[in-house]
Image (cartoon, rainbow, N blue to C red):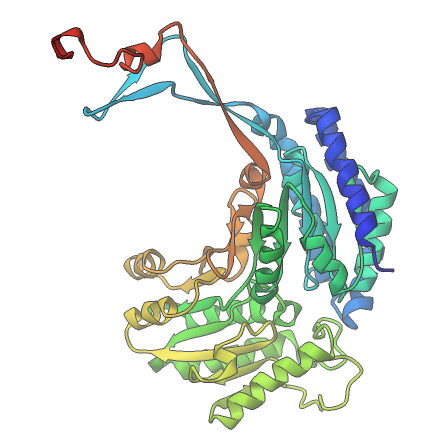
Length: 478
């Protein structure tokens, strides 16, 4: 059932009013809300895993359990352990810059603090690829910061969206957390609400619409987007291990991950070794795919057709395509929208596959002769959400990381930096703005309010800012 704009505004006003009248929630209440989230996800674990099957057609239950349940509980537990420390005012130096000297003057008795207070009501728009994780895991930082929440999950995963609405209604009052389901029109109305902060996770194209809508009310945003995250396979790397880890990341959730390795840059003399290793390891993981519950389906027909269109475009423009299909299965007729892992060799930039985020089990592989070419190529594109470097050469690693800009980096693996709760997760430019996870999430969803307590010294007078400004000898004579 589609939520109405009237209902969304009613809940928004309720939450905003209570935020004012009740003030910032105590540490005890924040811990209670985190505990309820943990209890909720734990109690509904089986239903969550089943909802993934219902929404995707086929999704490995083990992976769903880890990515949609365990990965939600982890951030909640981390926030519980750190909450009281995070909530303490942060001391800063009470000092004044002395004009013309570059020196600092410190004042005895003065105090400078940062008090972190809730922003108020945070709107959350979550995507379909990890529908429960990307809706609920960010709540760890939002709840820890003391906010109330309105959530709009994806309409492309109705089973999990409806389940989250049921779960949250059972464990939370609507004044704390409320869920609104519905089609893109509901999402458009939701993004135009006057929240105190909004978190959007999804595609860059939709993010532009969200940002425009938020601008009407000057709502501050955290945007978690995506882009074409590159893999640089260094000349000092273990090619077999690099290929294995890249294909593990590329086939997880059938590549439907914002941080999935989007394309690989491989030394030209090691291209064949990389491709052979990629085919070998993928065949070991998935000797069959069509009816294999380990291999995830593409979410729907629209996205299936989109990825197939990229492949057809690449073929028509001369690319060599390597389909990894060890069971020689016929994917033309199937119950679910499965696409076998596919490698596209040395694609050109005029191909759609090198222009759009793939979000599927397709890996373009380009070659290079000098590592400087990889840096130049990456820098010629939009800044990605993730960058992955494989190799043992410390100087080369430093060169690649220091001379490129990305949301985050994982060395000798892919995707893994998102799992580190003490590292901020976010993009840069077209791949996003702002970041969350751990303490950085707490601060992202808090207002850092500066508080200065003056000393007994009259700083205005000391600085010469109390009239009369000119000394007597400088005044003109009568």
